[in-house]
Length: 268
Image (cartoon, rainbow, N blue to C red; front, side, top):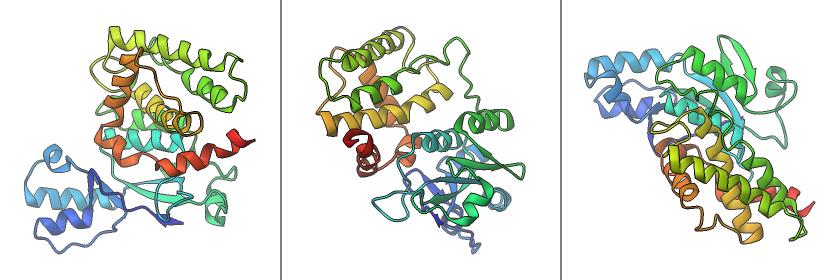
């Protein structure tokens, strides 16, 4: 097991307290949202007390480790979905990176299926990104991220059609067109309802779809020299809006890991 040191848009507690002139030392892997001071007030005393309190109980998260660079987050879009949810809700967490090619015994004890992501909530280890994100929404409702039921499935078929096209070895089998059809439908929705699936504010559906579109962009670009066509400008602007968020930049997979992760499906 290793602990990731994530710094692009957040500061670890120890760094935050040090910068305020306190001598408190806390674990470097406990991640603190970058707007912590603004959210909880700028008082040094209050920030110190709050940091101590949250540092003692950060959420424990197990996610896939990178296969290309040690101590980096891996390429699992479902892990990123969970981390995005925590980032958007500004929840401190302790990230434990798991080598899925050599799963440690401690990990198999808490999750016999050996799958990620896994999060510890109320002393219980919870698996499955659907269950985890729903539980986080119920336990930490502010800010609300729930997508209305009538919009929750928008864009949900893009990932499966992307995989079909990626694996295809026949350019005339219709898999590319199937993907384009789903992207076109999504383009129309964002044009009328954007910039996000539920309108002006990002929601759970975006946090689920965003990582999958990131994989689509990298994998299809690498293996098929393909990109979203200019005829779908709202898909492209949507991807830019999601990919440029601080929470996404911080939790996204490395390009090398995405390429390596999809290689068996392409070559198989």
